[in-house]
Amino acid sequence: MPFLEKVAAPDSPYRTEAHLASIALKEEEPSGTLFSLSDKVQILAYRYLLKIYQQHPQALSFFLNHPLVKTVSDYQYYFKIEENNWSGTGIMNEHGEWVLAPIYEGGSCTFLDGMASLLIAMSVYGITAPKGSLGFIHFGNWIDTKGVFLLDSLVIDPSFFHYGVASYSYHSARKYVNKQGEPVVMDGDVRRFSNGYSAVRKETHTLVKNENDEVIAELDFSSRVFFWPQDQLLTYETPINMSNYYYGYLDLNGNILTEPTFHTYMDASPRRFHGRDIITLPKEKRAARRFGLYNKSFELLLPHEYTYLRVLNDKYVLGKKEGEWYLFDHNGQRLDQEIPETFRAGPTNYVGDIALVSMNGKKVMVDIEGKEIASFAPYTVVNFRHGKIIVSQGAQFGMLDTDGVEVLPFEYQEIRLTKDQVALVKVNDQYMSIDLTTGKKSVFPSQYTTVKLTSNPNIYKVTLNDKVGILDITGKVMIPVLYRNVDYQWPLR
Image 1: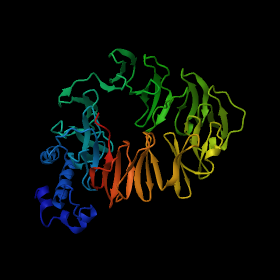
Image 2: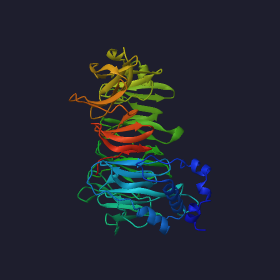
Image 3: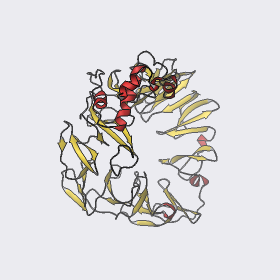
Image 4: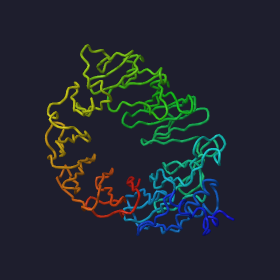
């Protein structure tokens, strides 16, 4: 009996109460959602077929030509939606129209250059994965902003589109495709950066090009190259093994500033200056790892002798060697002064001249010298974000600026703040937003049990009866409160 017929048969083991309950299919979904019980079983069956046979014609046709009506409205905002914990991921726009049915595997659904890469099936190594592959193999495709698929088959590890071109894995190499689905011949593995530069990685060497497509550096080995906008620097790397590599730095004229001698491990990124004039860099790995201090000319200010070395703020550097703590200035000169306990308490992220430090189970605000700031001492400090400090007195929360001046009074049950200076607060069990710049307040309907911020100050994630939806800042429903999860993505790019 064919697989789908076996699933659909009345006496199918896939339709038993126990099986349906085990994969959360027993209960019918609320009115307004897309799929019935029989739909659910069919979707899971087709997904299973794709896991074991990625180009199965019937399963491919189902996913790439799903009969859901595609949106025709123009839109700016879109949301990744998981309708149920069995269904998978889809995309809905701000008008509540489905761009893509929620039947696909999870993962990124971010539009870049007008296209989004989408994971459709996943294979486990040893079943159908290509020879030499490790772990899970991701099979996918691309869609445009109307939800139309680019290709009529699946490819491995589809990348984001960038400058009209995307890539996918083919055996041990990458192949390229344009936004019309046509193959593109590239001179090596091309990586483009936000400043117009690019890196062309070949089997034996790597070319770094400027915005005019002129070669500014030729590395005599195959290397990944990255651009760091804040520092206006490039890094390049040489692999040690699957998860370790050495990296060095290039300027934007292609001059090699350092050889690839600095070490990182697993998912750690190359270190950056983060707007300061010095940087700590690691050599060797694991137990042998030691840090040194460099300036922007990459002159060594402190040797690679420190198991811990951190630029604390605009005045001090803290180091540890052979169990002893040391304090330095930005020139690498050792300072003969007592080291505050707040400096040694753990990571201290300064914003200007102040920082939030967790010490002995308590959060305190400290100045550039590591001393507790007296104006915050009477309160319980909750958080320090976007230039404001959220504090509490008893069960009531308020907000202060960095000078200790009250921004919001102590009358709220909750306070959260976006980078756009919009506060989400809860008072008398009701949520409202407050624009700290204009003072404008918007009150949300009282039936929602939770309201959460997104990265957009005009869009809010709400919960009602364990279902999730989206409201705008006026309380208008953008996404119905029907789904297991909804995540705001980014404006179309």
